[in-house]
Amino acid sequence: MSARSVAGAHRRTISVLDRRGLPPATADAEVVYFIPLDGGDWYFAELTDGTATGDLPAGNYIVQVRVRTPEADGSRSSTLVFLPDHTVDGDAGLVLDARRAVRLSASVDRADARPTGGVALLEQKVGGQAIGLAMMDLNDYVTPAAAPGLAFGVQAQFTRNGATNGSPYVYNLAWTFPGIPDDLSLKARTSELAAVRVRYGTQGLSACGGTHQGALFGGLSVHLYTELGALPATRTEYYTPGVEWSLDHGITTPDCDFGWENTDMTNRRTRFPRPGSYTLRWNTAPFGPAASTAGWNPGADPGGEPDLFVPMLSSWGTRSQIGPYAHMTGSTVLRNARGEVVATTDLPGTGDIMVQPEAGTHTLTVDAHRRAPWSDLAVRQHVRWTFTARGTRDERPPLPVVRHRTALDDRNRARRGTTQTIVMAAEGLPTGAEVRRLTLAASYDDGTTWTNITVRRSGEYWIADLPNSGGAYVSLRTTLADSQGGAVEQTVIRAYGLK
Image 1 (cartoon, rainbow, N blue to C red):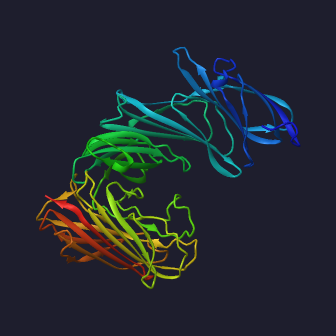
Image 2 (spheres, rainbow, N blue to C red):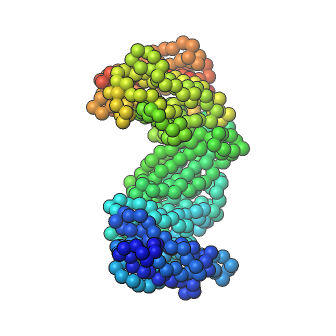
Image 3 (cartoon, rainbow, N blue to C red):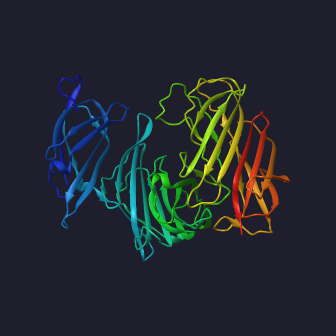
């Protein structure tokens, strides 16, 4: 809040009350915020024992303050006092009273289910754009409110007895409201949820797994964590239907060391349209690249967002994190139409392409070598794209890929001596392009020799049947050429194992 000298300013004398109706100590209510609804600069006032005085330009504001209240059990509850549309058109007092607030709680109709966490996200349109304004936990308090463009989303997670590790089930519940309702005692019935049987496989070797689940509220989300423990594992996950969920899964060494340099992460977005039974799988080979784009950024800050990020350990239906990847080394090389190297990185699939754009045909080659202690698969990858660029700085030429799906057990093994059906799909083609050719070859000696496999088209997919013969692993080499002159060759050594 500003000084009285600001032209057109009006004085506000602010009084804050906690849930007992008393002025809070300074440490229990520190700052009150005034957010102009027209998108202008925010104002704030520091509180002293629940009071502040200052001046604001005329206009309409969101007003919010956090208030902590001492409770009988010695704890301190948290209250968000929120006004979605407060008009300043003259000098006045303003009382922000936490006694108006209601408690946020959630429950599910299962006797042994206990919450492991929960969060509420509040957003409102400011200057015509929805922005996140506040976040609170289950059992916090918030004042009911209604206004155009105001939205309130709640997510809660439950497991057996509130365990964060090893529960045979997880409830992921979400509610959304157009405003903050008068009653926030939220309840869910199991029969009204999507019941998803989820299989978490290994990547061939002993491993530990963990997961996050986040409901997307207007693009915002907070991911709540549960640990699976030893893999493979299967559990039932219940989801509120009709909500878009952002899910991720981490895999690491058997001691569950989820350090950044010792974990691989994959993610997916999904929506379960209605109550009922579903299935889902994680860690399903083959692992390889997902579609991405190339970019140009001459003079960029190397510490910023990389211009290139190919998710190199993706599988059917999931995308892996961007590099660097745990226990993976390699390189990325960009060549122009003359075959000259114009950019390189010492990381596979990621880095900055800090060169001036050049029109013409380019090739981008990624080589990756992997020795993850939880995986004996995708030990080497070689991916080579050919694409045409206009030579403008803001373009991002597509890097399409072929995705593979095949039936494997929970250790990503197939039975030796059987026939393996591989389903393939093109992803990330340039706008208007079609697949002109798709081929597949298999190797049973880690890429020393290759056997061409017949591929047939079936609608939007390509299907191949190959023999599971020879050694302990099957490697795959796939090529795709599109109708606009682009191409990609993908090789993954040890795509899946045999038993």
